Image (cartoon, rainbow, N blue to C red; front, side):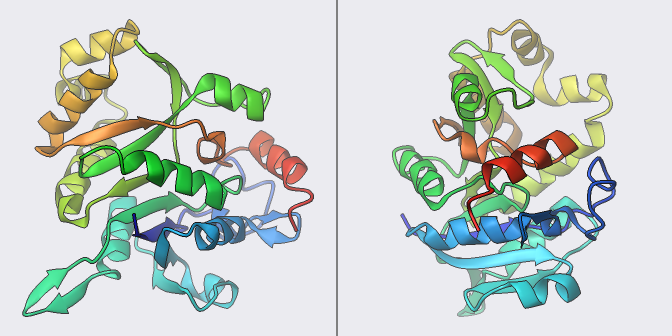
Length: 260
């Protein structure tokens, strides 16, 4: 499988990490002499499946850090706008139509633990399923073994307890539907009633009771998007742990201390 990649590096450093670094955005926070995004780019360059790489972020701060393989696109004001811009940068015009050559791997800019091997492993698992969107879920046991004591949000399904990964694979033809549903979720994320209406009360009840299955998740995806999406169990905790609070940053500096 050959893919192109979009790295989301536009998130401003105005949250939990603002007192830990004066970097303008989280992707530029220093980890042992390297900006956090540098670890992500290096991993993508090491993954043999990745062809083109697009980075979405503040151009005046990122331009000098990115190599020849990387295209820089200025960030917009929202996550969905940034996704649109990133995917659009990979399009080509042919015969009056917009075309995409390869599936797109969307990756967060704050996952410095990610490796080329873990990216390849996820893509290998995706290649075994037929869908338009693939999302990794990481078993809690794998996270606890690799990063003891790390604090993550976990969800219990019938098949086990998992955390979500910080990348996903998408067929660009499905991006319009994906962004539409993402905007609905962002609008409803602080309103449990609206969120329940989007998911369905039965699905939400099964989730809260730990009775939701992989098959249920796939049915919900088809209901929301009208196209097939799959959750991919993946034993690579490197893609399941991001850096969004001081304890994560301390862990990254400790674990990656010899990665310079």
